[in-house]
Image (cartoon, rainbow, N blue to C red; front, side):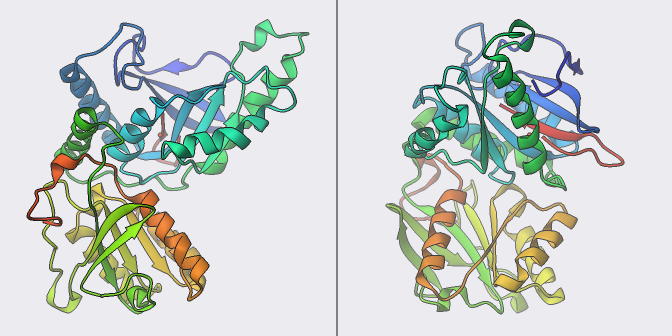
Length: 374
């Protein structure tokens, strides 16, 4: 659908095993992109795959993605018209464990050629169904994937042509201009992904950690003085029914004091401040000290600094969400939802009782951008 014809494969074989992948090179509006077509858990044609084999294939996939030009976009393909609960497990594995919630995720819903009025009407109800299972997307396309050569002259031909246009536009509109920089140490990245993968496999995506760990640092924007959460040193809070502990990373003038976290690290990092040269340096130290390479990052700033922070993070290849906050309650409530959404999803085994805190892309001049499609 994306290529409008036969694609050029850079790896051989049929997707018949969990996390096996094929890489295609295609052109969209004159830009060359790479698409990683990946089978999710138990989606292969050869039946169930032992976890040992799944981990071996996942490790290879992670190494391949790291050596490529980074991941620009995660495309999650959903077979409509019904929403199955089992979709949530692969969503968590790819969005949280593999991509660390650092790149945009979009949904492509297929099998909608028989929608009575418009294929996009499915999303009105479908989005709510997906949200029930904690699946949220930055954008979507509702399409049919029936072979266009079989539709010439039929009532579905127009929908098939429209579907190709929608998916290609979805990719172009949502790709990060700059790929998220891969972690400098491949083993650290792979270890974090496998740890979370095993947790999901053992406990399921629903039986998540009893306490979400957030490490924060605030500079000239006193986020926690606004009454959003309260105490500055160690804050316990409830967001959307989940328990959170927010811990301060410490005073930068005396180096960061990394809070005690589990071996999996924090579930989210939050940096609050306007954009300045000094805050750029503080953010760099915070990011490096608290394992920002394998953890989602949220930068909270004022309305005037959102675009500047976004541009700076893109320029250094750091995948992070940027949000603004003001003193009105509506904005604060929205920030809470965003924190809940961005935290990594992990199982309860990663915590001890006595402690809480101890792919699509654009072609650059040098590289072919990566698209990780599941």
